Length: 277
Image (cartoon, rainbow, N blue to C red; front, side, top):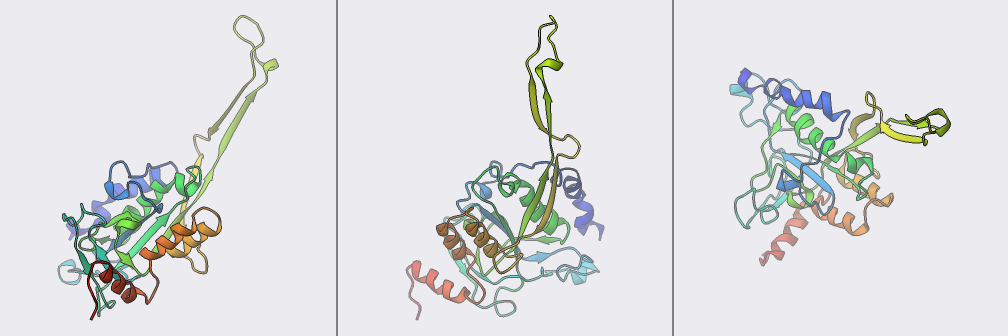
């Protein structure tokens, strides 16, 4: 029904994308949303468990909605390992607890789709400067509006700093490619004068072009050995001196790699004081 059309109900998202996200800075959501505050790894991720939009070539939601879009699945792109609820206490409304997800797909958690972004520490780096735009694109435009992906993993935020999200095998990744057009104006002293006739001092200004100052494109991350992969992209940041070896190692504790979930589950269970028999 039309009441279930995210494209219609979420038209404001498309308006923001067209009018703002592609050509002006959107502030990162760390002040307004605790999930994004003080990300120690300078990486964020969203994980979706349901598809609620048909006819978009993403997920298996189909019309008629009442019969073919009940508990529909997103396109699966990762293996969910476990959720440590102490990482983001506001999401499960509890101070702790955990959920384990051995197996994958039909033998495990079912279909789940994770997608993230990362940025260097330098605030002038485009990935850092426009991370708010990237977060809007990943969370609201590309996945909610375009694909109809919704619903968080139980016990975890739908989106947040990487260290507050579920531990998974991998995540897709988007980076921004930005062009800034600056206009410089210089007025030499001998071409100007003050009102009293005395020579005026020279002036110089440098400003973003008011019409075409910023152009932002959102593309799959280019990583080390693999594109569209958050861990591989973070490896590239490390190779370029934009992230440390310690940060890369910590990212790999959250994005553990394909086929490595069970080992990480076993390690986590032992860390909680249990013994695997």
